[in-house]
Amino acid sequence: MEAFAAYSHALAALVIFTLITLALSPFSALAKQKAGLAPGATPREDYAEKAYRLNRAYLNGCETLPAFLTVTLVAILAGAAPFWVNLLASLALAARVIMIFIHLQGIGKPHSGPRSVFYVVGWACMAGLAILALVAVF
Image 1 (cartoon, rainbow, N blue to C red):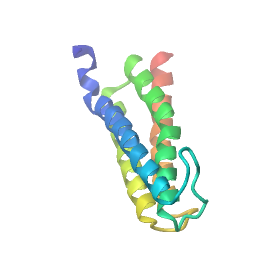
Image 2: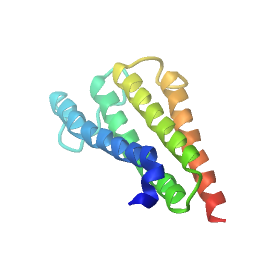
Image 3: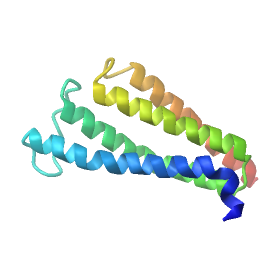
Image 4: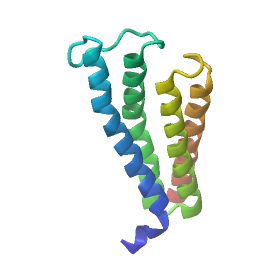
């Protein structure tokens, strides 16, 4: 595994991102159960409701994880510059963690608030990883 040692931060970011998403799942389920919703039901779309925010944080993780996993792994396998891969993957993870905190606390407005800023930061990091991967491939 020495070939991947230079990418340890990026690999750790992938695992931590996955663990966070997995951890949000039962909390989302419990919040929906507490709200009286059937398994698999979607909470009422009201940012003021904790069950909705928790469910959205979980679903955001599920929606983002495949893209994050893909661009990070391809960048690693293609041999993109480890410094940049580690930096962008770590920043994407940090942005995700901050975004989840903001989401769960209900900070800001549903649109164009601080949560949106950190979403864009994470998105930009993943776009950067994709560019690094494409440059390394070609």
